Image 1 (cartoon, one colour):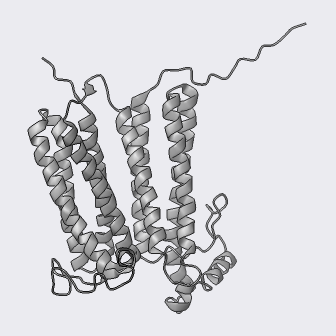
Image 2 (cartoon, helix red, strand yellow; image 1 turned 180 degrees about the vertical axis):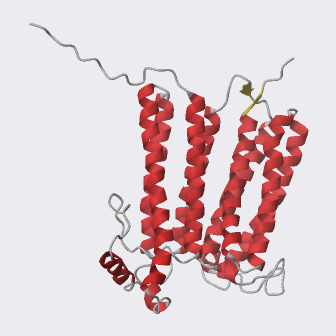
Image 3 (tube, one colour; image 1 turned 30 degrees about the vertical axis):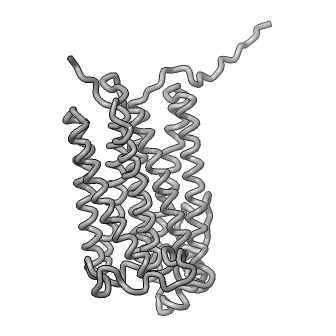
Length: 358
C-alpha cells in the first residue's frame, strides 16, 4: 500500500529581507499621507457627513442606480447638516459631496489590502522576523481602530449638531499621527545597512530631539482642535489677534482648562504660540546638530527639518490670512506630517550614524 506524506507549507523559512520590507513600508507611509490629505479635503469641503451609514465590508461599492442614490439622499436629509445648512441641496449637489467621502473610505480599504497581502506574502517567504511581525500586526490593528474611530467621529455630527465633535476629530488625527509615525520609524529601522552603526551623540542632544518630536505632535493636535472648531475662520490677522498680541477673552469660560478645548480664541492663540515655539525648538536642534554631527550626509535630515518647519509656519500664516482656502489648508496639513517625518528622520540619525572609514 502506497502512503503519501504531505509536505508542510514553507512558512518563515527564508532570510529576512529588510530592504524590500522597508521600501514597502515607505509606500504604506505615502498611502497614509494620501489618506490624511483626502480626509482634510473632505472636512474642508463639508463632505464628511454625506454618508450616514458605515458598512466596512460591503460599503466599497457606490450607488449604481437612481433608486440607490435617492435612498442615500433621503438618509442624508435626516441629518442636522442638511436640515440646518444644506436644506436647499439637490441630488446632483449631494453627489458632489458624496464622492469625496466615498473615496476617502475606499482609500482606507485599499490601504488595508496593500498592507495585508504583502504582509502575508513576506511572512510566508520568511522575509519578516517574528518580532517585526508582531509590530506590523499592532499597526494593522491600530489601522482598524482608526476606521472605527473615524465612524465614531462621523456619528457625532449625525444627531444634534451639524458638524463633528472637535474632540473626536482630534482623537482621529492623533491615531493617524501615531500610526504614521510608528510605520515610518519601523521603515527607517529596516533600511539600515552595514554602513550604519550606533551613534555616540550626547544624551542631552537626543532629549532635545525627542522634545522637538513631542512638541510637533502636540502642535498638530492643537491644529486638530482649530480645525474642529473652525477657529481658523476668525481673527484672520497675524501676529495680532483682534488688534492685540494677547487677545481678550482667553479664559472667559469656566473651568479655566476648558478654554483650551472649546474657546475659539484660546484654541487659535495656543496653536499660534505653539507654532512659534516649534520654529524656535527646531532651530535650536539644527544649530546643535551642526556642532555635534560630523557627517554631511547625517546632517541632511536636520537641514530638511528646519526648512520644512519654516515653510510650514509661513504656510500656516498664509492659510489664516486668506481665511482657510482649501488648497492652502490641505497643504498646511500635509506640511505638518512632513515636518514630523523630517523630525523622525533626524531622530533616526541620533540613534544610527554612518561608520567613519579611517
